[in-house]
Image (cartoon, rainbow, N blue to C red; front, side):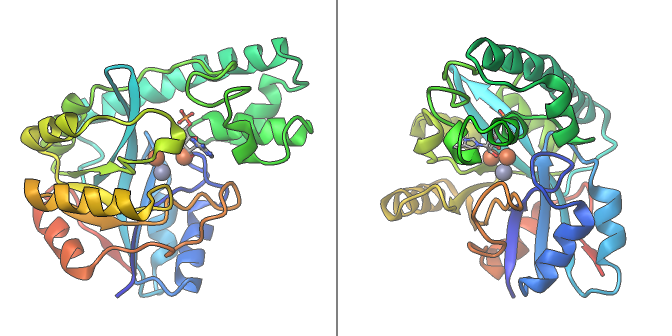
Length: 282
Ligand code: AMP
Ligand code: FE
Ligand code: FE
Ligand code: ZN
């Protein structure tokens, strides 16, 4: 069983459509793939159609933008009821604020001399939940930076960078409770991804565990071996599941689907905690 529990489609900042993501998961030899777009479930319908007849299992999910103590963090949510109103309203709030913030980031880029426009970013994002990676792609198109990751520096879009503007992000304790109340399983995404900026303390992780966190994403491209060992030990101590996943974004990142995977026993334990939705097997 090859299980990848974190992948993005063009419903957020990935480059594959949900159907293309499903096809890529089949081609990568995966048995299970989770669709975890930022703050949206808009890709579910197309992905569910696309798994039919493939034998692939689709785990519907999302990745929520959170912030605590001035530090941004991401919370994966699996198998929640997408219609549960309180959680749906919070996702909507974050998505709406992404537009205000996206325009403000583009304005800053223009002030800094980058020849990009909001119309261009809208075109790149399509119907997707708009984010900095779309603006990064605009900066690449304009020849300002050579690739998407080069846009995530202090000069441009990195957290606290010259053109960064914060968006509304949910308090993670609130987010954990919202996910559980919708029957889902919350897993802290890449908790040790230091290259993206400051990361939350172990105390915060303990607090989230007390609030109902279900797991830590341990095996992730942004974690070095020492970080993985530290997080694996912490997960064991706190009774949290230790997951692994690619965080695939299509051609916006170099990581391949299935580059990191989740142990089948951990996946089974995650399924056992979920009451809001079921995986879809094609
Ligand atoms: P946003 O959701 O608009 O705040 O943008 C965050 C997204 O930017 C993340 O989900 C990643 O896809 C991407 N990102 C963040 N940091 C980096 C980085 N250092 N290199 C490449 N992509 C990044
Ligand atoms: Fe992303
Ligand atoms: Fe993330
Ligand atoms: Zn992600």
